[in-house]
Length: 70
Ligand SMILES: [Zn+2]
Image (tube, rainbow, N blue to C red; front, side, top):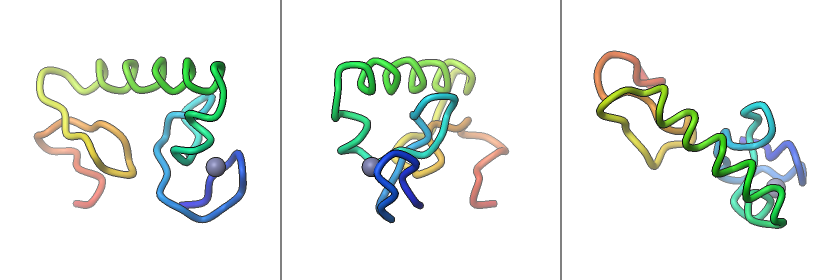
């Protein structure tokens, strides 16, 4: 996916401001970006309920039912 911050096509996560796609380098590139990433990550993780799946470009999602690939 294309990073909304640097514009490069690389692996991204939806942890930019308001959940936009951002690459790891940009997400960790400044203190503000890192804090926003952590905020987005925990908000999305909490929204998943008890069991969440990680390690995917879509970000955390619930284990049952709503995988973005299906
Ligand atoms: Zn980037």
